[in-house]
Amino acid sequence: MKSPIKRFFDQSYLGREKQLSVQLQISPRYVYQTFLDSANNVFVGYQEFYLGEHDSWDAAYEDLELVLAKNISSEINISVGLINSLFTLVPTSLFSSEAALDYLKLNHEIVDENQLTIHENQIESVESTLVFAFPKRLKQMLLQQFAACHILHYSSPLLEFSGLENKTGKESFKIHIQYDHFDIVYLNHGKLVFINRFNYQTVEDFIYYLLYVVEQLHLDREKVELEVFGEFEKQSAIYEMLFKYIRNIQIRERTPNMKYSAVLSELPKHYYFNLFNQYLCE
Image (tube, rainbow, N blue to C red; front, side):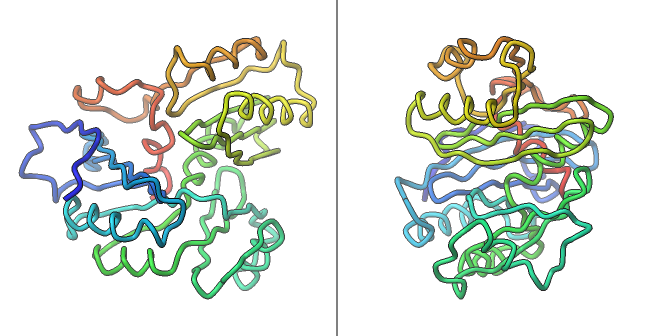
C-alpha cells in the first residue's frame, strides 16, 4: 500500500469521509487530492501521493490503481483532472463535437488514437471549449472504481478562474507552476489571448520560455503585472529569477470565495491553487 507523502485532514471529519467530495489531479508520477465539504463550501483536507519516476501512463497504472483502490472510497463523488500536454482550445462558437479529434491533431501528433478517448470541457468564462486526450485504460479504471466520476483537464479550472476574474479587467497575466512544467495564461479586456504549457528542467529553461512569451505578446516587463501561483518555494531560484526580469509580481493565494479548515494553514497558500479551484468545473 502506498502512503501519502503529504496529508492534512480535519480530524472532525473522521468517519464522515463519504459525505465529502474529492478533487483529484493526476499525472504518471503524482496524485494530488483535496477533500471538500460541498454543503458548507469548506475544504477539509489535502493529500499527495508519489507514484514513481514513471515517464508513461503504462508504467504508472499499477501504482495508480493501488493508490485509488486503497485510499479513496468508491462511494464518494469525485472529479479527476488529467495532467498532460495533449489539449487544445477552440472558440465554442466554432466548436463541433464531431471534429474534436481533428482539432487536437492540428496541434499534436497522435501516435495511437485507439488507446485514447477524446473529451471536451466547456470553459464558459472564456467562451471556449477545451479538447483533450484521455488514456482509454485510465478511463476504464476510473469508471470501474468510482460510481460517479467527472473527467476534466487540469487546465480547465485555471482557465475558468482566469476568465471569471477578468470579465471587466484590462489585463491578466498568470503563471501556474508545477514540478516539471508551467502554464501561462494571458487575457485582455475579458478575452483570452494566450494559453500554453511549457516543460522545463532548469531555471534557465523556465525564464527563457517566459521571456519569449512576454516578447511575443509585446508586454512591457517594467509595467505588466505577473500573478504567480503553484508549487514553488519563495526562496527558490525560480522565484529569484522572476524578480530579476519582471518588475511587478504578485503571489496569488487560494481563493477567498471558499473556506478552509485550519489544518490546511500548514500548506503554503499559493500551493495547489489550480486544484483548489477545480470545484468551478464540477
